[in-house]
Length: 430
Image (tube, rainbow, N blue to C red; front, side, top):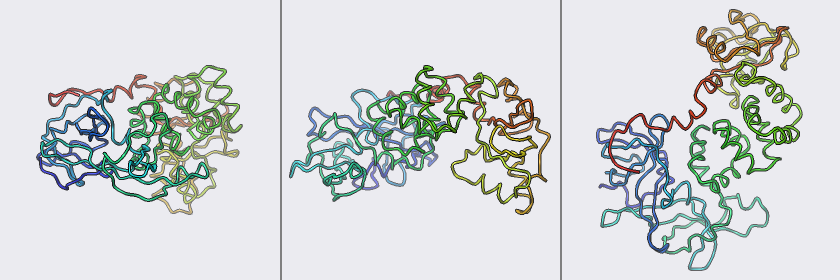
């Protein structure tokens, strides 16, 4: 095996392309897997990488199948077992388990935190953990001090530390979160699902409310409920307020009535009212699928104003594809629904022109009682990503987006099924 540098740091390697001998993309490095030796004083052995292949499935690539490691690319033999990676009890993930661990330096008994882990190839061709990049902890006078990146940084040998300091201590997740800060919520949800419950809650505690709310929307409902149970009533209510109302309603609908009511009572009254409205509809209807937070404008609003609304980063892509035009009031249930305007149509007209002049009235709104299949048929017939839902008085009450329809039509365990291989491309085990 050739080595691009003498020492490779795993956190810097995360996200690196994994290539076959011809230079074709196999996937991206997401983590490294190590096993401990007979004593903690011995350097752990690297046995392979967790690689994310197309389809967002994570597979195990044994270190023996790796021919070159560099910060620019990891080259493999091209033989990859496509079976989903499942961590064994004897295995440890560098990114998932070791980053942010607290250790004690043997030299002066000071406390340090792991920020990166270096691996090196030995003469016998094995790869081992050799060096730790750590930050010395300073005295914490306030709770916020624990989250601040303070203190001297240094490299130390694995044998220079007492590891771990205390397995029962709360482990911060600053470095793990930083390593995945650019990933989509669905990908971070996959990362959380692979962690044990204790480490998962370490990460949950340090994620911002906005980021965690996005991740909860991508988790299977039973695992999302597990997270809510672990963060307490106050933060659970805040997370539900931050989520899309339809996703919050789906989650609350899985809880016992008393628990759901406690959460609704703890939420902001306006946000809770939106969720209560959605909970009143059957799950397999347009009302049960819709969100109450589309972009709604009056017909006098300009294209420039409409584009400013759909440009907001927190707006889901499906809701940014169109604005819905109604008479006052503009909060669901609105005044009379007039029509929708596609973003593509707005881009063809001057910014000062009003959206009322660009209405698409061919898309007939559906009632909240419309079954999921009818919503899907309308989306397909008109090549839409969202469908307006109105009551009997033509008031807009919500919008159903294509992602929610797909979620309803797919099997309940589709998130787990997407990780199952369609067939192995090589032999080997994990």
